[in-house]
Image 1 (cartoon, rainbow over the protein chains, first blue to last red):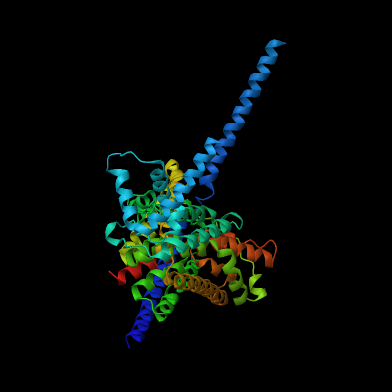
Image 2: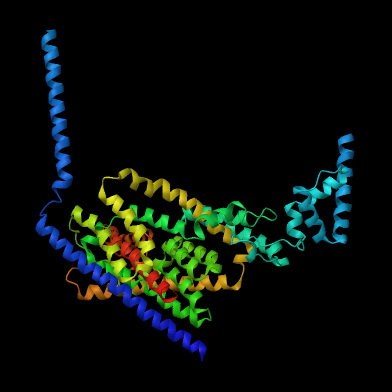
Length: 81
Length: 443
């Protein structure tokens, strides 16, 4: 009798546990979807710029630096000749 | 010549004295000998006495002379110590050392989760050294055990590091796949029923069944709370099944899906906004505070690690968490868990039951994840490859890699890794939630 009881108890645990896990993840999914919508609405298209902005800066800096170096070298050569 | 004579004399003395020691009763001699090393003032000894006292301390004698009344090395302290039986202190140790060497083989030659198996197995080797008491309350392993495992500290640190390593991008890009991580937790509760049916105490059964979540730190956390006596076997089972993911999962995945299903291609994931990633750990934590604060130690540590990573301004901290800290803790955790591989702790019938239930739990979780993914594929607008359901068990990132490997075997060029990471990280959250539910039952 007691053992049968325990298996039933375990089944109850299963119902409770799976229920809570699914409920938790379901709410999580809904909140995340809502969040994605809100962020897309209020901070639109921020994704490409965020990584892109520093990237552009870096390349611009790089270009400027290269330009500066070239200018310096030409200057130097001109003076020499 | 002289040297040879002395050597022979020494051998002779050794043999006669050891046999006389047997005759006199060994308990007294060992106790006496242990005291004399610490307290008594030195008294002149003959060479034969020295040789015999040395013989008393050799491992060979300790293993073959089983009646030396040695105490079990339990880190929990004197209260839990008991005299080792003849079997435990002789053949038990030898068997455990052989098991340890098998673990070495699996880790080195087969590449099964070497980062964990090597420290665990070596800890097991050290714990089975006779007379040294390394796993006792004052031994190195015992100190480590009491420092971070008995109080659940190390598993939380590991969770922090895992959080700092986890990228929730794939989950955020396709949130529905999180439900697969929930389905795989069926392994936990299904095997709970199985364990109870097998005759385990319901509280012990809960601790064992958490192996089905395939999550080492969570298993240790729960085992500590619900069944501390079984911690060793549970931790070893959990980590060995995590290591055996590439062996256990693929046959189950293939059995439950058709060839066409395995070949399903999934679309490209949308890019995820940085803010989404930043807010996500906070959302998870808030939800767990509201739904089940019992599991917030695990989820809290996890969320902290992930938040530090995604904040992007504390790279030094998140770097420490995902590298040096987690590595350090892994060493300690491995050695501490290994100390539970001492013969008297591990060589009990229950360990076998734990290993079997653990395997069933793990397989059931995989199967349920795959079936759930099949179901979702039927009703979803975008195609879902059922294989990714197998990644719902929380062995991050092994099961996602396995899914990806099986997928690309079926159809070269079909990369499922990122799609599988979604259920995979959801599985971590899912098993932490399941752990919280189990804790709430036995509060």
